[in-house]
Image (tube, rainbow, N blue to C red; front, side, top):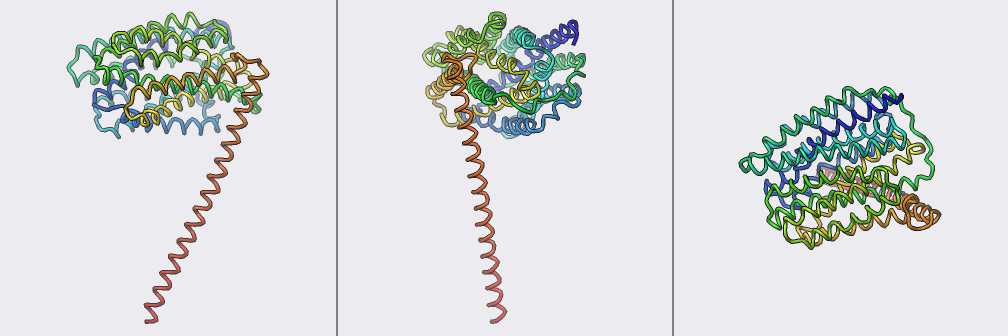
Length: 440
């Protein structure tokens, strides 16, 4: 691509998230608040999120094995998935049935996964590593600025509209703003992504595995904290509904400065932010006054931006040997897998916020330890040791997976054999009874 085309593509992608950020803050960003307003507790919310995340993860695993789907009709697919995701938010506020909400949110999640995959492909498939860092930082900053507008508007509408009617206004408004970002997609020139090849052989797959492991652990803990924080603040500490939107607003403001502060940082510097981010759940747990959660939101947002950049920038550095297509599908799948894994923890804790927040802290701490011990670029141990730990982790996981598959296969075959034997015995018994009747 020519230099002016690279600059144009960067700005279009930056502006796309400038509108999409407000859309997300007014829709998915307030989805937990919407569920809480319907009277759902942490277990019910976790169940809804779990149901809605199963399909995207399965689709991600399927696409990862058939990557050609991502490299055909790239622009058309991106526009269609982008627009349909936004259209479904017109329906959500008028639904009260838990299963119907789960079904609709599942469809939204599938479309979000597909949209995220193609947006990542545009970024990772169009730029060199430095440009990937630059556009990710610019998108993060523009998304943060857009979040300010979205969450400010969300805070105002939640505080001023009659109770029970807020989301009938908020969600359609968010969807309309989202369509503005869709319109920008139509200006992208993506012909260079058609038929993009994928490296067939991976150089050291354990590197990608250990990075993916630490990243999905980080994302899971971040998503879990988002679910817990809203329910804890509103349902347990009795804070007003608009306070969570205000916290999101503060987080959005902070993320702008964080994106600019961390965008050119080395992996060694980003790991400091990653480590500091682990303290967030403990700060929430020991702070009983709802208003004091506002500065905690700023702290969590600033440090989480560094941790998130660490994972994204690592995959940018792996681009040459891992491939943009594979990276795009994997990152989108990891994001939805992280949301899927939130549900079992939420249901397991059964409304015990202290336990849930402590588990979130342990997950964040585990993510830090994984990065520091198994990812050579950020490890505190010698590079050879980090590669060894990464290889051991990868091989043990692969071996465990193969054993699990073999056990599952043997179990399934044994079950089929037992079923066939049972059916045969039943048939023999029926024949035996019929013969008795006939002879008699």
